Image (cartoon, rainbow, N blue to C red; front, side, top):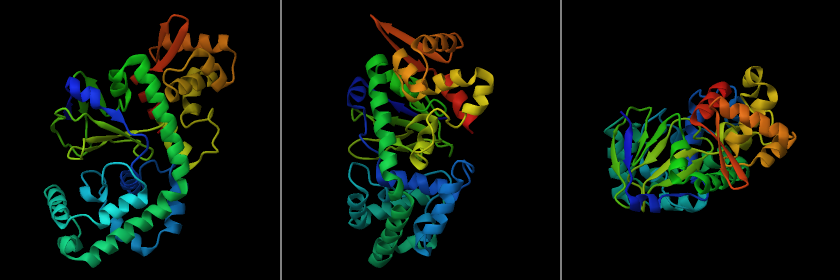
Length: 334
């Protein structure tokens, strides 16, 4: 059973997309990618570089990261701010919050023995914060400009999507492999098997873009001032674009395998629609490097195959990928 997020009219009015990723939420997801062998090919170079950079002091932070399931909430404070500003919040976190967050985690999984006295041992908390800072500085900071470039482009795409199809269109396509929009409920399947009901109660939901969160969702039901949900930014190629920005946009992961079925140009057209929701035929042509008439022909064939939807308003035409197209591409990309 999924986690069911219940929206009221007030919730829909207050739901928004964060302007940038939360650095420490992104760090938690990146540490999971580092520890566990997900996407072994795509992330192998990044892992090798991280292994070379990280020192033994990284172990403390890494020991708190499970393959799936909850983390102590105080380690990824919600809200905006730079990584250094959020780290200052962790260093000043009330001891009562540390105790309650650790108790929440222990109810679901075990924790290292050294966490038992963390709330009452300022030196141990300082060591943990130093460990987190060290991991961030060597894992995320070198790629942060590329990460924010991907998330800013994704936010612009989501804004176009909301204009052309409404917020329901955004919620329905934000992560179709793990989420399903059945108005007024967003069903979120959690790999840990967690289920239940989250009533937003007029607070709305904060959608937080994540480059490393390419797979399973992360949800913060108790965050203030509103619950948050991490979603994969940048489509199937977001992570690759952040870690290897020099990769040619017309040769994304998955292009080779789908190109043998759809044809190389048509696969590139499909990828362009996935990456740029609401794009026009002219934008498609410019992105792929083909004539507008050719882009229109490929879009027609993709539409007939159920892989894109085309909306016409007056003389303006916009193309959006269907959930089937996104799942197909992600499967091809591995």
